[in-house]
Image (cartoon, rainbow, N blue to C red; front, side, top):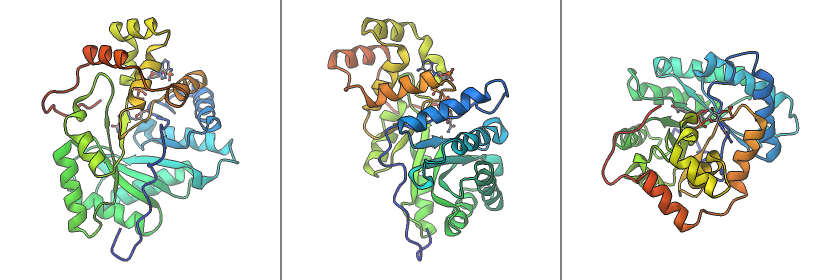
Length: 289
Ligand SMILES: NC(=O)c1ccc[n+]([C@@H]2O[C@H](COP(=O)([O-])OP(=O)(O)OC[C@H]3O[C@@H](n4cnc5c(N)ncnc54)[C@H](OP(=O)(O)O)[C@@H]3O)[C@@H](O)[C@H]2O)c1
């Protein structure tokens, strides 16, 4: 925010999970189920939706628009809608155009958080200048970044200071799941310290974790499905905000239950998970999907 602007509170704080939408909008065959999945999430009370201009080239954002249209009682100001600009579009003018286009596809008046999808060829100063323009015009509440490692996240924070908009970044959205725990070494603690939720993308490893034999056995010993066990694990990681994706209403409901209706996992289960998926003992390169 420029010095004359009052920054909005971080809209990500207070959510326990969000709905991912990657791969939605790709095919008319799955569209009804995708809309129903998002609506199931809304009916359960989930109010955070994650998307990007990249997903089906705007198709996922159109699916969200259709889902929201069918739920007119869900107030816009109760929702937190996150979208992302592609690095190849992230010049100042391109960032502005991308934000406006995402808003227009979703018919949502403004974005709550607008992220740079990953670091690319445009100088970050340019992207941030575009974000500031969008914020000044009320088209985004806050901005953020995605797929930045600790050094990149710190550099972005320094840029904000240089441009007079210190501490306005809402999040760094990164891959964080049982099979990708590297961020626990440095990025997650640094973000916790800065009161910035880490949006944990692909908390089911994009589906890969569900085929992990050890996780499957442990889950089955506990009478759970692997998705439920993986989400119960991440739900209690301080500072992490998971955004699992499902195009099936029944899975969205399972995921909601895993996060909202389950106590923290017992110590013995956590120890077994640590043995299967060890916490990092040293700095690891940022995992990216
Ligand atoms: N910033 C980035 O660069 C970035 C990168 C990747 C992802 N993301 C965001 O994070 C979101 C989540 O990540 P993701 O989509 O990669 O993967 P994910 O949420 O880790 O896993 C999704 C996969 O798990 C399946 N699934 C979900 N719930 C299930 C359940 N209860 N039982 C069985 N299978 C289940 C889904 O299939 P069904 O649909 O059939 O249920 C889908 O195949 C994305 O959608 C996107 O919004 C961001």
